[in-house]
Image 1 (tube, rainbow, N blue to C red):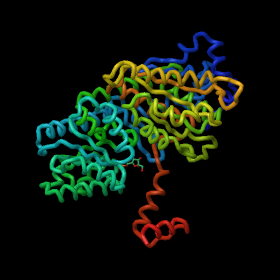
Image 2: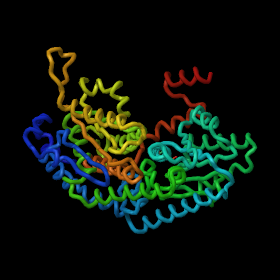
Image 3: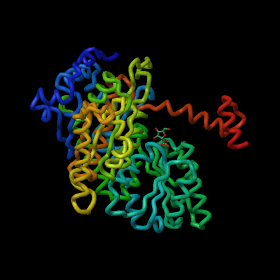
Image 4: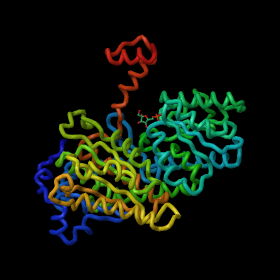
Length: 496
Ligand code: F6P
């Protein structure tokens, strides 16, 4: 059933500063504390009326029923006939699926213990090859949490461009490298090509038994075995864990070994806390739901085509690209789950960067451009550095000041120097960027995607849009195929 947007479309477009002036309790009504994260949506145009209208729509779309169906392991990914069970990886889901996830985590832990005990020979470098969901999640975790205590050098290579691998070869000792091949399907061309090249590099450097130093992370263990990985070094995970939702599964191996098992567990616990919050809280006090309501208000009512996240924390510099896959691969679709035309804008284009750098590069457009871009600031109260306090103070004050400036604007006589204001932003302020809070933060984003998908009628869990390009690249690789004049010309120019 398509949603009725009429009530939401009829909401008055009151200015943000007026919303604050009209309601002295606005801040407390539009903010929330969950799992070590303070959420503040008071500088968005959400109001209690808007939230009530969205709650009504959520009821009509059976959001609660669909949420329950996901946590119960029902077939929620209808186009692929699959359950959606990444939450089972953190202990929240159908008991049988939770048990399977726990067994696969236990297997991963045993293998990590063996590696730490040198059972696979000396290991100093972990070279993880994988792409998309099989790379972006572990990369974010290792980058965000691995600053202080680097147990291993972890290198994650996604691109088929040999430059990426060569850069790793220059840093790593082949005799002390463990190759981790991460692929849910174990069919992804780039990943398998990169894996072959790593084996070749090891062979060229006289590493004895390179295959003996390969670990596979996959939902298709039989394919990994066919490829040559010994069964004892395959860490499987469930088919019902989607690629872009898979960092909680054995795909998180580089984080579990690189950061240590305790941190990996804390990550899962933080995510589970957010799961419980999402599953059990009423929508008007439910962080993922409120964030999604704001997203939908801007895309569906105000015509915003993009949404920007700025991490005011160097450790979260990969967050915008992680979110790009999570949000755009999940909700970038033009048909509903029933195959009907969406008939409305899909979810926004996700982009972003790191503060304060981005202020000196792209914030011009945010303050004075003609596009409406809802902005999200993500920062942590505890500093990640040990330099004098002034650094962290400047970092946070800049984030807060940007939000204030976007909302307040400034009118002067010279139009070039005027700021319209009334530009929305939300702020996610973490107590501290540790494994637990990062787990909660990522789970928050996952559930927000789910709510957006349900209210738009989209199946957030398939990704057929990536297939056509893959097929055509394979056809081009085979040769003898003509495309269009432009593509044929490019192929000729490159390869003669
Ligand atoms: O091409 C898109 C995609 O299927 C993503 O959804 C997935 O995360 C990525 O490729 C990698 O796939 P795999 O883990 O099967 O190698």
